[in-house]
Image (cartoon, rainbow, N blue to C red; front, side, top):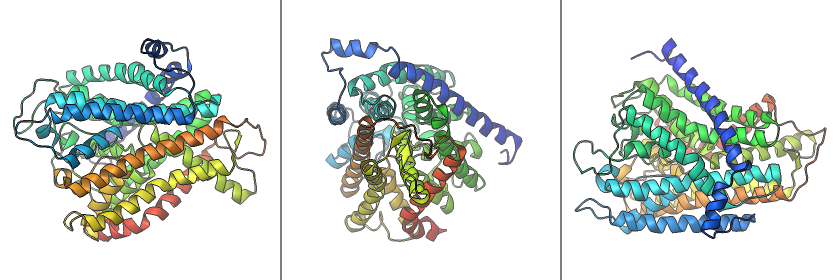
Length: 516
């Protein structure tokens, strides 16, 4: 194995970062054409289907998103219960947890996917949800950008269809062909066989990574050689998980006619990711053979955790306690870069709060993106930030009472595994220690409810903040706090670190730090 400090590894991470930055920029240019250019395809489809394509209020936008999510969950649920391997029975709690998990972009799996659902169920139920889930969050991020640049929210159906048909679909088709060429299998006619069943893997991988879904065909994720056969597939998967979340920063700058506004938010996001990666780099992974080498395994695993994808290429049990602590912070930060759509909104929430506190200390009026901030934006941003810590602590408190002690001990490494489960559910990450061992009715219902609240309440706050910007007029103040500078990026990183550490420190002390 090449040592972690070798030229080969440095060159790999350099290529990785350059690809992420360049591809996210070109993707943003394409997104700008689709969402803010002369795109009439989705409008024509909506007219044919006789669906409203007019401008929506935030309330109609949010209700439309809930209606679409509920409708596709019903369809996927009916397919799942009829797509089980012979002799397998799915309990109501596991069905609820699975549907809640996949529609919220979490893809937490309390089942062994390759031995539970047939290839038909995987492709037309779970993968169906993996297309809809990122499209809804992506649409909300587009609505937010539209609100601060053009003072309107947009139309949910138009935004969702545009993202599905004009962005996700063509890119996923290209990546599917590349994966097949690189040796990743693809079939809809698989049968259950040991040790590694073959299914629709090449068609699943693109949306699984591009949409920050996770939800691998295999319980061990990309640690399985069939899903991740070589260094090139490992690099493609890693890059895919970052390009969409980071492209939204470029898209913001393009539409603000000031690319620096997006660039320095992107820099803050990437710096947090790189700092965590460097810290985790020199601790060797344990307990598992790595087909693509430890260094490449760490690239994919770190990218997966910090993009809240939850697709792992190594078991979490093979990670050192301080690396687990770093990854827990990464999940909780949820903006380095976080998952598609929600990660971008998280960055905006942090930016608004950072501007507010800088204003308090400097005696200036709080102003962001040339909008004066008032109590409503500050209050909504505070609620958006506090939502996930509140869900995490309430979830842990409930788990202490309703879960058996073998699943939820009160201290050390066992507690680390338990709090990871709750944080992963609240932040829609999806990685976990338990796997099939977590298939208990209490844990299924608890994490299912947490995933739904963590997803849709947070997107609701994002739309409410966006709605406040649509009511404002831009103000060209010369005394404003500059948010398009490197100094603001560093201040933002520092403020995020302080907020997250304050909220997570008790859990880190009782969990991974106690084990360390």
